[in-house]
Length: 116
Image (cartoon, rainbow, N blue to C red; front, side):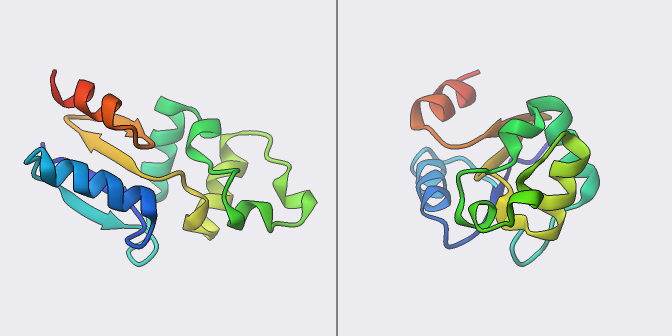
């Protein structure tokens, strides 16, 4: 199974994750969900396995700019609807490798993850 890194090309955290993967000679595909979108089924899986609270990027400017009523997310269904409408609200990066998912980037977590 191929390793896939999901995110937005010009995101600083994505650039750090891509640099780490390249420096560690890890072959991967990059999926830019800003230009390519993301399948609803994939978001559902990420939310089911990692928790919608982890997948939804509430700290980003896109979420913070929402009207207060739209920020009232009560569950995965609401979160997925928001993320489908504006992919910038998906936390970055999302890494899929051998069926496992890692959300966010920390070099020590990637190092531990790829040492398995």
